[in-house]
Length: 364
Image 1 (cartoon, rainbow, N blue to C red):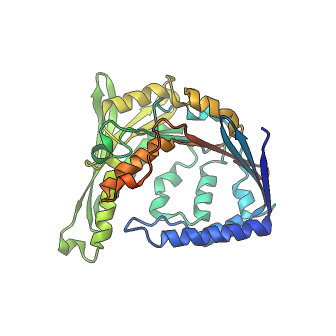
Image 2: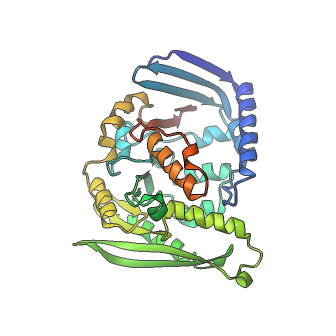
Image 3: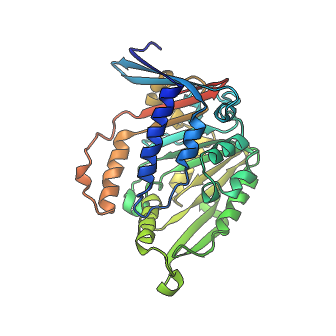
């Protein structure tokens, strides 16, 4: 595509910009209001990004929208160059990569082609390179790294609302794997291993195999209940941080806490995960996985496809209007004034982005 504005930066300018970004990220991470820390080491991110040698940004202003394209080159032999080597996209253009996700109004939708990124091992190396380890890089990912091919996830507005149902009540996660049964079993083992007392909470996982969902449809049900410990058992746990974590969990999963279904689809070599036990949510996800109408078939997604990089490894869409509506509900839930957040029409077109890397370049 043509562009109306360009900006180029060399390695020194990129290093300065990244240093400033790392400082801002570090400052933001220092006050999370009791939320659990995401263990991204900004100094390691900054060191990793020194592997960039130059960058170009092109902006295309069109009556139908604004397109921003960024291309960066990596320093040969750098850690970043090795991590961004990739295998080349395995699924074609951006639109098909959202296949398997139910077609409906959404908050956010994303697809990651793990195989095209270089496989699960490369994904783990990239996470560790920026300091993501421990609980944020669970053992089941390492155990299944060679079998996971792609991950797709989308969250949709729920008729139950955020307070009762949570942001993820209508979500669907599709994991393509060479062995989806082994993947499900690994997830079950990881879930059941959470049982115990820690951080001021008692964790009570549950699993029900081959549960009847509707008619002949069967799936595995799971849940993870939590309850606050008494003062003696909680010890020196931060009560304020504990309350914030519980409120955040309710915002994500609803008043019932984390629960949902897992359904193996052998013919598609896929595992469906939902974060509610509503039959209609699982039924819609199953229909999409089995070849029915999907998010990738949407008129808006297809119209935006030519604006994105070809044959991407990562694709994402953010429905700004729906997200702002959810943010207003969340603000009120957390005791803030939701009307302070400006209203944006719910049907505002989404923002789309895609990334492809390999051969010493990163394109977005």
